Length: 201
Length: 201
Image (cartoon, rainbow over all chains, first blue to last red; front, side, top):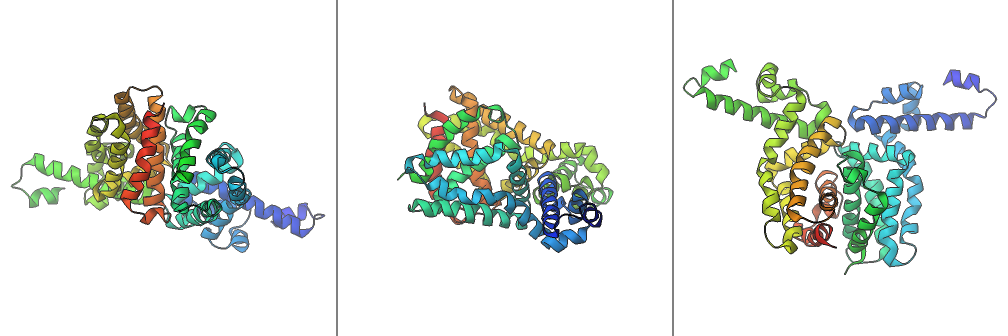
């Protein structure tokens, strides 16, 4: 940190600080996605970011708070998604949600935090709580609220289950032929299923 | 081992050996389901089973082989499932597969190895390979073979994705309201979806 500050003395401290925060968050996403929550250490994140552990704690607090910050940042663009997904004809909502989810998984920038949260949430209760808060509460419940249907939350969760399960088998466990199947062919099969969960009587 | 043999001197060695193997496998399932593949050690399994690490290696070989044996044993009853699921009217296959999967998850004996394989497979390639071999190759492909439909394997995998995803959100990450929802209500919603994946034109 001192070295970096010295090197870039001409830059305003605020930008320097934002750079460092971003570098720590990027390192955290990388560590959490590769190792999962439990095996990731603050020291390991600090080392990967080229800073001192104390600085990581200073910016973000506990390991749990670093985890939340690391995955939340990546979910930030998705936070406008519920309105965008629910906006438009109701009979296209299944396809919009399906395309949104695969768009996130196919994007290398957002795949790492998704892997981090998935790998961590299946074996650690703290990470599972972050998953519930981000994916279930912020994303699914807001989609459900837009739909104004009975059992909307359960419907949104069963639709999400189809998409989460497909992503797991395709991108994480890599089951064939699903892992190599054409994305448009998968979307064509899943969009009506997701639509059915959300809006079938 | 010596102690146990001494204590039960009257019993035939074969039964003793089978008892020890079972105890090691039970300990392995417990360790793998709680810690995941990477954090589980042969020493930890041996300790939990009350035997020496060397004996664990003697019976099962490497950690990977112990993992495969631990989860395979639990999948053994399921190995007759593809025929049972595919046997009967084709329009009931979705419900039979759905009931089979939730039957396994709701059974405390089989839930532990399922958790073990799921937690391990998302963060470890060795465990993912075991998952692919057991679930994809032995279970899904055999169901697909019974159905004799075009794209049968991809269909079976997308059906499995709905069930795996629902199990993850309900039993592992515990997203509400899904985690507390009535099982029959869930089966009623999922069976037609699974059926559609398997048999819709």
